[in-house]
Length: 338
Image 1 (cartoon, one colour):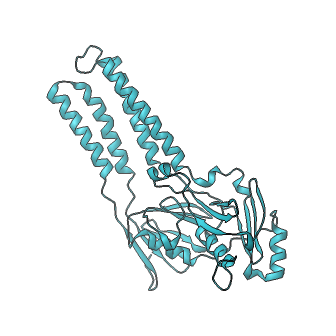
Image 2 (tube, one colour):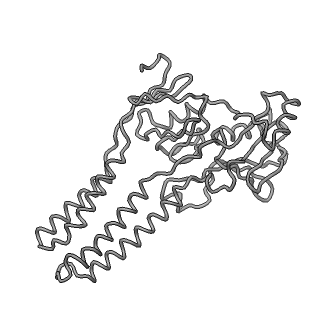
Image 3 (cartoon, helix red, strand yellow):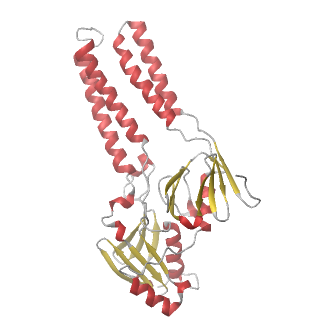
């Protein structure tokens, strides 16, 4: 496929394999220690470190050429084509990002009607440019659902304001995905520790260089660290919308009169006079998101005494929903209502 005259083209390259080089270097150091000191017990953890290096290298994103066209995103050389009309949501660096305040770069994950597609984070121009360009080409409203709980509300609002002044959003088909890399690293660390136990108990029970006590100590530390890494990886990389019970039944209707929400135990109507602000991606935990580059995926509508969360489970990206809410809340004069 060839790019058209008005297409935006992004080229990706494989990033430098820093993690793979570190693990491979560790394996070489342990092999050197094994042969220099005669403590051949170091050979087994060296093998595990080498295996981790191979896993890290295989996890590197492949080289790709991405073309953003008027109606689709084309990924070469695979030849995959994602119609813009089929895109329900997308994230940058594992979270929805406000296009006017992007401070991170990373992979782009596109949730569309046919599944989930991840675009590499090593793009030129930067992936944030592609992310913002896709957002500007998506429609601001999601699909209509005549069988939904809020169908009566959006139909009445259409009769009052017209179809172009009513926005509806329903749960999308695919939430997103979490990265496998932290869990792969945790599994590798646990296997490395288990290898130490096997080495101490089966291979070198009488070695003065690798006693059972020393191996058991390293095994305990490795298993504990591996479990902690896995736990943080699972919690930090779990897609935020998955924490919302019954997310497949989520519904949101917005009109000049206000917004209606059905989201698990949240159900009701907010007029624009009740809204005091809108925040996208406000951190609720500073240490866990910071470790894994994950920002909570939700939009918060601020009201007196609290906020109403709108989670990233709908068939349009949260930045688009935030813009619709902001424009109606601020009104035609562009200033927040008192």
